[in-house]
Image 1 (cartoon, one colour):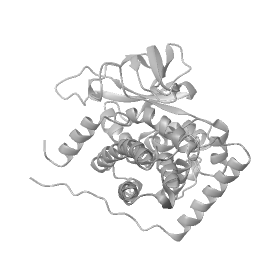
Image 2 (cartoon, one colour):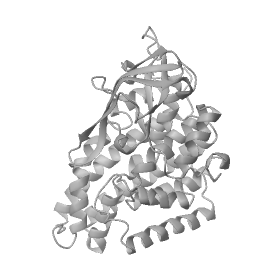
Image 3 (cartoon, one colour):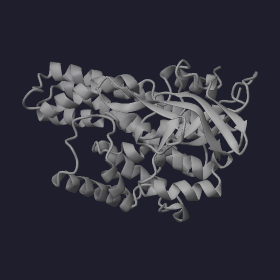
Length: 386
């Protein structure tokens, strides 16, 4: 048996990266001073179209894409630095996150020239919003068992089915939907294709799914014989599984898989201060060590993606470890607040607010981008263990 070689070689960060980081930090600080950004009393992402457009004007969306498609031809490490700073600050980046993180790269890799010219400049300008149409009711994390189908009709396809847990679909204009274009056979991964669906088309119904925090982020999208023209087939017919595997590598490996709850860690560190006990410092140190290790692993994947490779195995590892870290962070923060007698009602009120929000959101960390069990199955197969 040949053991696959894992690529986790962290790159050296050029000095220019630090200058870019300070640009982002100064921009965020100015936005906060001017009252354009809310207090960072939450985890995860919120939506602000104004903020997204401001980032676009600074060239911080579509950073690595070719200029002919509205991009800026900057490096993957520059994009990574901007991404880290925005997440660490709790900036409201949900509006453009999916199209910048995975829709754009997916179009660049598999899209037609017409599709690239139509959608990518709008994404880079913060005006064109995409959502992801993968999960379905009743299929759990077994994506290959999807039942949404696309049937051939004159001039295109008619798509029928339901997609669930679609982040931000209520704010999006388009969704990339994974559909069956052939009946399932012995190989369930065959006969699956991706389509660009106009969410304003007849037959599309978007229903809100309210989460435990009382927020509307997820949706159920019902597609009732929605017509999609031939030009909206993304990539090759029947190649959808390979394409979505590439797409999920973008989704699973980014810093949002371990920085979603960073505000909790930042506020916890601030509240502990210099008066923390030895055991408190030790537990905080463990969290920081895990954070820095995940960062190094994630950085290496960013460089691998830039070379055109799809590090599916490495991305699954980072996603699984990131999920464990973020859920451990909530538990440890709660324990330390009690053991260190931190007053979250007065002296560290912001920490209490972030913890309340993080406890509600931490439930979803397990399933977004693929449940733990699915990730560990991917890792086992990638390592030749099953």
